[in-house]
Image 1 (cartoon, rainbow, N blue to C red):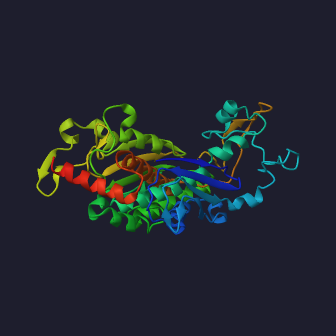
Image 2 (image 1 turned 90 degrees about the vertical axis):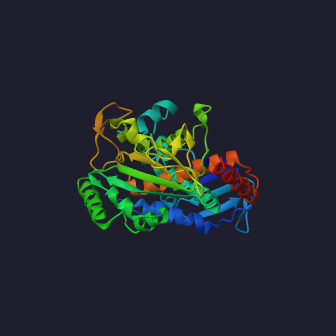
Image 3 (image 1 turned 135 degrees about the vertical axis):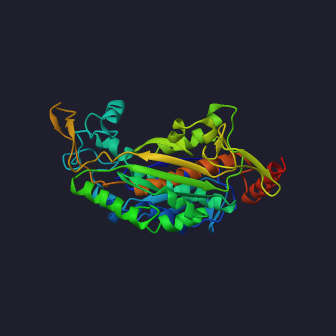
Length: 392
């Protein structure tokens, strides 16, 4: 399985093409739209989310709500393009009228300046920010929705939620109250900050409100769990085949993510080996299993069969309504950075995007290991494989 996205933030369309999804998978536009709505909602999102009504259209690869095995093309229309049509017009010659809204003062923390240097966009840094914008993640969530639909068919569940926004932190002791991943989903999706309890939700909202009042932005941390993943996905043979490495790359590849860890993560650095390693047990009904999950479901770059637990750190959004110091790329005079419409925080959306990227990487690993031509055949092979490793 592989995919590619295309489109600019204020361009007419966002597009993704997915290759390698098996035939016979039931999927509808409604399935994907539910995930797109989750990305749009969340406390701290900006005015853009009010303007857009993200809905997907299948342009290829699906017939009568069933995948054909051929490339799937997904399309989301940018409603806000109506206000930018002349500025973003691909076929019109540049004029004084359609070259307004130029970006000449790069924002610290954004791709503006370095992207301009790399691609020689010295006349207008909008050529950089239009593609580097997190608007592109709408298509990664759409692709992730397809991946999640596939994983659902083979009893793999993936969900992301928020651990902290600024100084307001989720009480992780609350996790002991949940027996299934779907229980966490039901609770976290009921709060606008995607946390685990009402008290923390209020604290997170207060942090966001204060940042907005001050013209500032705020970051946070998101957690993604995946259950039902069989042992043996990924490989220890080469660095490129390690599945945890692929997931780490996918997470850090999301806009604004600056760190990733698994299981106990960086806290494991302060412990002894006897406190960290997941001891091995065996039972007749389970086969081999671990007594803990401090390593986040991975050993040697391979899944252990335990729950995958991965966290990602999200920096504050670079666009501030109280802009920071910058320099005009034309005159080299000191100025405040450009201001673009933005969110106060995108951490609530980041949990959904990270969830999508983990689902995509797990789906890729499944489709690499088993026959990916047809869903029924894949299920047959996966069932046989699970029985084989249980008898190991």
